Image (tube, rainbow, N blue to C red; front, top):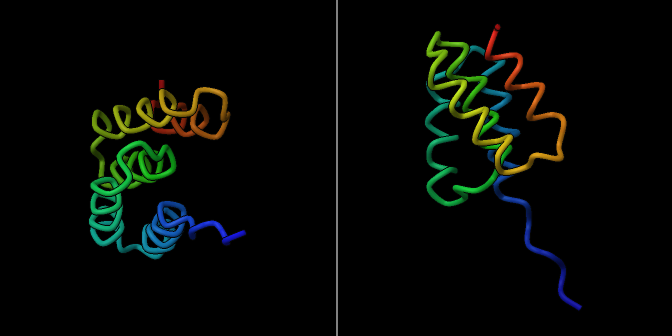
Amino acid sequence: MQPSPPDRAGAIAEKAHYHLFSGRVELALQMIDEGLVRYPDDPRLHASRARALSTIGDGEAAIASARRAVDLAPDDPRFGEILAEVDHG
């Protein structure tokens, strides 16, 4: 039995999260966008993108990214919470 491949999308999301909360928002967005090219259906990357876009004041794009995360993983409450966080109303 071979070991499962590493969770690359999760690693990208974690590293981007670190950069985002270290004040390197543009670097975080760049990493997330590159990750989405490879893993377009990973809700964690869309959620990370939503938070980064919200940080720079792009509320409309942040909401769209958060909605995509919810669409991809409707049973995961984390993504609904992020949508509520970026959609202040």
